[in-house]
Image 1 (spheres, rainbow, N blue to C red):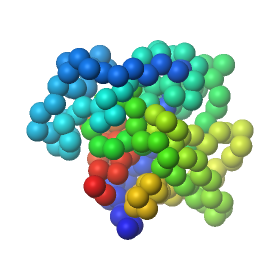
Image 2 (image 1 turned 120 degrees about the vertical axis):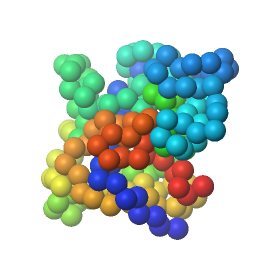
Image 3 (image 1 turned 90 degrees about the horizontal axis):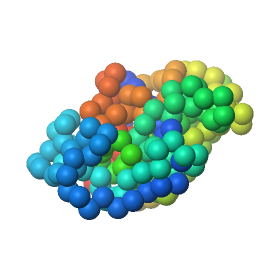
Image 4 (image 1 turned 90 degrees about the vertical axis):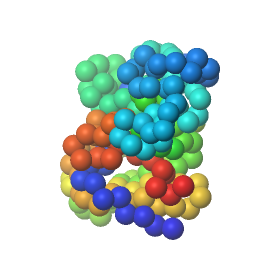
Length: 186
């Protein structure tokens, strides 16, 4: 099944290993509500961590660090952090709070203005990245995510920024509906 996501921005992000199961049922310290309810802040889901697990390792270096946070923004402020051309997190719902673990095993594909295609699979917390060292992505680029069930979500518009989570926030920014997710395919 192929779906076209109609929004102008498709940005992904992840800014080390420290996940924990959230059993408190209370408020998430990143500002997202984990208490449940009918819908989350943007009207989708309930605003809770679907995985029930959150990153608790602060900025400790790890490919699992800070799911849902703006990766490139964070990494560009540190001389020690790797440089990313594209980075983000894929989730189950549009409205998951920062630091919730996302979807493992989704494939993110980016095709640049020269027709070169780059891809990465999300890791155990949903993070993905394409290193600046490995790719010189020419903008504008297009992007799609293929989920484990074969559903493909394609961004409707071309992009020039690779910091996916800067627009794909819990509430959505710059016209994004919220997190990069397979919510519409459920």
